[in-house]
Amino acid sequence: MRVVMFYHSIVSDWNHGNAHFLRGVVSEMLDREYDVRVFEPRDGWSRTNLVRDHGSAAIEAFHRAYPRLRSETYDPASLVLEDALRGADLVLVHEWNDHDLVARIGRHRATDDSYRLLFHDTHHRSVTDAASMAAYDLRHYDGVLAFGDVIRDLYLDRGWAAHAWTWHEAADTRVFYPRNAAASGDLVWIGNWGDEERTAEIDEFLLEPTRRLGLRTTVYGVRYPDDARAKLEASGVEYRGWLPNAEVPEAFARHRMTVHIPRRPYLESLPGVPTIRPFEAMACGIPFVSARWDAAAGLFSPGDDFLVARDGDEMTRHLARLRSDDAERRRLIANGLAAIAARHACAHRVDQLIAIYDEIAMEVTVS
Image (cartoon, rainbow, N blue to C red):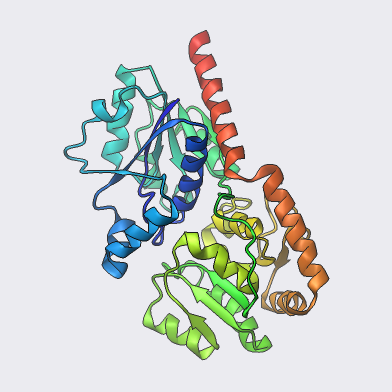
């Protein structure tokens, strides 16, 4: 199978969590000996910021961590779609692409029915920026891959697409698995500041419990303004900036526990839609507590796979227990690892994607 993918970036994960899942999916496809081409814009926002902050060494580190993964950079003005799409069986177009490129690919599909074409939505813009999402021209697409049931239903109910499937993210278990390391810290949180979507929640569910319990807490992430960094320091938190995602498993291994702090749009408008971090934490065998996220869409079992804190006091109690109760930590680790192995590795998602491809191909053949 030849798969062509248009994504924001596979090389950079600077404030770009979608790269995590993309890397795992492409790695799985390569293991199955698919012919995969990934296109990313030469001046993409994430890649530009990564190189600005960390130079070309960050790109070189990506290639060392993922030696089989490659992307082809392009300028939208000079991209020749006929060359890029030649021989394709399946084409995936991510929702961070420019509206014009999405439409151009759709028009190409209208004149060439030799491949299946799917739009991939992995963000909360369907509820926070609905006008922008409605402006995507998906008339000639075979359907939408949405990373949650609520988002899938929005595409169908609003008439943005004729067909849509839920395609959750998952852990790349080639990279995310338990590592042997002595824990030198209590709590680690890996997350970006970004757009005031969870500022109050970070204070309630991370900083206040750290202060109350005297935890040895480390934070990794980008886009932290000076006042946010000052707040971390005042709470006794060590801030270490951007962490390449391939190094996250080692960071998890150096700490006893982590937390999940969903952004407000997910809690308020997209219940049950998990982002990538819970999958990766469970795959690495680190117990975690999630802030206010117990609508797991049947993917996980809150209370068994992870703990849920509905307010800062409950978060403090859970973290205090996990710091001292080895049996509880082992229980959560075992359950989380079992959930990933059974249902939530990238291999499972590629299986599902091929089933969707076959479903579309059959409908096309019958029609």
